[in-house]
Length: 150
Length: 296
Image 1 (spheres, chains in turn red, yellow):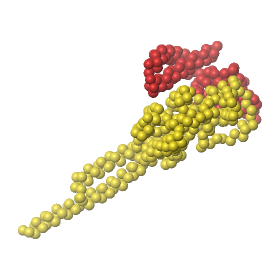
Image 2 (cartoon, one colour):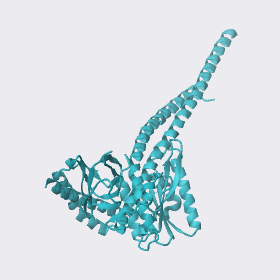
Image 3 (cartoon, chains in turn red, green):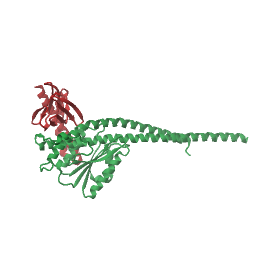
Image 4 (cartoon, rainbow over the protein chains, first blue to last red):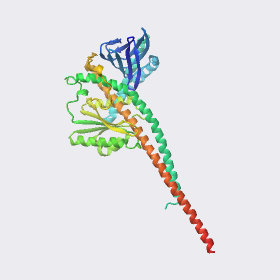
């Protein structure tokens, strides 16, 4: 039996991928790490970036992840991603537009929160977190795109 | 004795009701299938999250640096109860069972001298609890998962709960929802969200290979936990919402199936009655004609 790692990519909404791979490179918060069979047990957080799957010595699949956590054992690598997508589905222009709308909305929202009270304030705060998240995700996507194109 | 016209109207009205209930049953059945698929798809993430969290939590428990989301605030004076109901009715006992359990909890906590605060999800819960517990309700969320429950929504709810928790507004948070067993049975489940407790009922896969494993952590355990715990809260809420959505559709399907059958029985009875009355009228008319002829 060839030495393979059981690789799983899961998002909250579904199991995206579950295959045997030769090697997988995961973008950890403290640097990328490659997982081969027999890797020491590790739990690491993930920064936005691409997961590279290697089969037969070459990258066969790349998946963009926003953030999450990776669990590595000698025979398995599980990535719990908040959000995952194929890098081709990322389009610079769309993302830049998203980022701009998000940035445009922020000041108004912040101002509204300053004035609102009680439950209404909470509702706006949720909205604000939403937009801030969108902003961060968009930034992360742009960063990953730059890395990819290099 | 109702007249023929009354009976005819009655039959017509029952028949149109039956059409509605049987259509609702069909809709509920297809929504149920979708909801079940979604709940199924979300299970792997929840299971793995729990595995990672489990191994982390057992290491951190008892350590003084454990985050409050895991260890609690050290008090249990103020309880936040999240009551998850549906926006729409006509779902059999779905909302009633949740609300009954919720009321029981309120009384129990109240008798124990605790302060209760309520966060309702769904219109039905809000409307029903507002009457008796209006001043306890912190806020009500409606229109959650109108088409389908999204993780985004769960994350928003989690974020609100976290903000409250960080502001020291409550010590313990529990969610009440219906766990889906089958279209006929839904089980009211009370699950503690904060401080974190492994939910009962979610079958954990055997963790034999994990038991002795000593992990390295990148970055530190504390930082990972700090990221994982809020995320886990969202996952637990998401799971609860999905279970609830499936239960709601299941309960509605069963209720509407019964209603359709009852309407059918009723139509049969009314039709029998109608025919009998019609015959009686004919007979009566005949007798009148015959006795009229004889009298001549």
